[in-house]
Amino acid sequence: MERLTNIRQAMKSKAIEALLLTSPYNLRYATGFTGSTGIALITLEAAYFITDFRYTEQAAEECQDFEIVEQHSSMYAEANKCLAQHQLATVHFESDFVSMTLYKTLQSTFTATLEPVSGVIEPLRMIKTPAEIAIVKQAIAISDQAFTDILNFIRPGVTEQEVSNELLFNMMRQGATGASFDTIVASGHRSAMPHGVASNKVIETGDFVTLDFGCYYNGYVSDMTRTIAVGQPSAQLREIYDVTLAANEAVIQQIKAGMTGVAVDKIARDVISKAGYGDAFGHSLGHGIGLEIHEGPNASMKSTHVLQPGHIITDEPGIYLPGVGGVRIEDDILIKEDGIEVLTQSSKKLLVL
Image 1 (cartoon, rainbow, N blue to C red):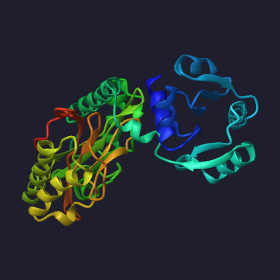
Image 2: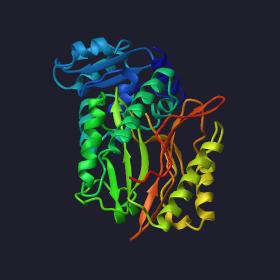
Image 3: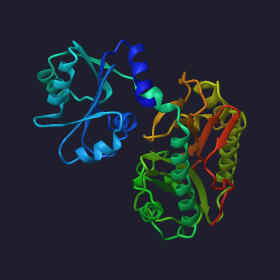
Image 4: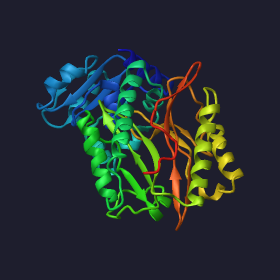
């Protein structure tokens, strides 16, 4: 009931009398539903979860604060009937999650006026409850163990795709339900590609290998990156590793509640720029994680987000030199009242396999 109360408070602040939820992530957050088919209609007095006959029993168990409505024509027609019971003239829909095709369906279905809105649920999702934090910690623990185990698998002659597959199988054996994004395994010259999704490239002696991966556990994600060496790396690769690690650690030493995303990003960017690699750090420092792999708050050169206790944000500086190689090191950080907690436990010492 607390989440529903908070959602209604957010609705009141935006003068919303009725809110139609179609985002699967916002639906999960608001209702607790873990199935794949459903929408929700929330008014200031009532809350409905609408689904088909396959999920009514599951919804009754999971959506404790919602009246369950079984669709007989379409989910949107049922939502319109629920809305009509309250004689409300306007319904707001999530503009970020409604296609033009769906919008036309809503237009032809609802008798109330449709109004677009964004950012009602997402700000609430940024601040994690103790229960959510515990789930994220378990997801991260699964990733940490998968990293430890993969060190015994990586060797010259193995392909990036084989490493990616082994990571996924390992995490799922531990209880994960899947990868939280397409796993990045980038070796040798491909490690200079920030989003070098695993390919059929064979890992060779002397390669840096960047592993950026995570898993879903009970609906929540983990996200970590480590860069390792297969055989002795060049002096230049060692140098950019040391600089990237220094940037990562500088953030851990200084980040705290009350800082803006711009200020946090600047910590790492200043370290890398001072070392002469500023132009090689082209992406933002970090992003929030939770039900989605990328959610608020962000840490970037433009982010106005102010960090608050309960935020979980990544710290992932990187240096990328085309034709040479690259490094990224990423931790997940929990912002607390009295400091921070680094949730990712895997070693960041340069490992040479």
